[in-house]
Image (tube, rainbow, N blue to C red; front, side, top):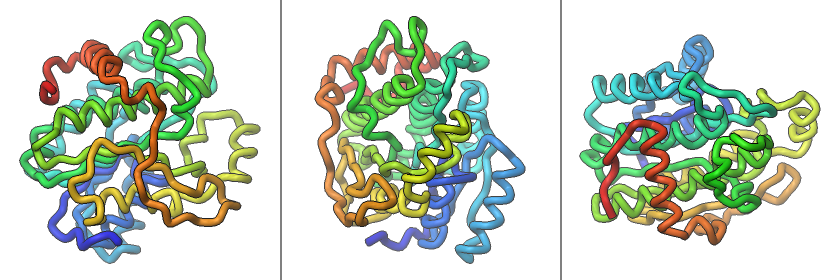
Length: 298
């Protein structure tokens, strides 16, 4: 069961809806201080007030940033550091699904930028405060869809061919490889790094997808509250103290399935355990974000 989180400082991305909102609410109910990182100020403020009242915990604030923008990610990280000198829990949750290939202001493919590069950037920019706050935890949201693809460095951002499903799955594969590599670099620091697939959860993640796909999936997907249970467990439970470099996958993927209480680590795809491949991805990520020499060397 989750432990009391009084005195713990938490940062949750994509916190104005879906799983991110439910994770933020859950942390607040346990007494934590929560910073919500959202791209829409109006929606973020409305949700912040809602979960403040529902949790009876006023210790919540908002940082506004579009995670498709590297400039705004840097500004968001600096804003957090200017406000706080502790960060015990970082939940990289924000994500999108795009039917078509769209480039960000930095020239990056949107899905890859938001679903992966933002995780890489924000985590590394906050590594110092996370280490100083140890014991601390980083939780990265991923998907079992990662098992359907291989990492293609020649088409990492859909440069040659674009597919919504492939792009999404590849970004989630990259998240797992980043999780494992960052965990290795954090070894011995008291910082645990894990990733989690919450199952098939309907949220605003699907708003940028077609109405037909959106409506079809809504029929079968479970709600955000159920999807937040496993990430909250990884963020708060003493049962996973010191456990790092793991992939967790919920035992319930669709809303019609019986709820599973299984909370043991699962096996991700074989490619995610390739350290040489993870190191190559890290180097490519440093180049794409301009963050050189970040993290710790293994």
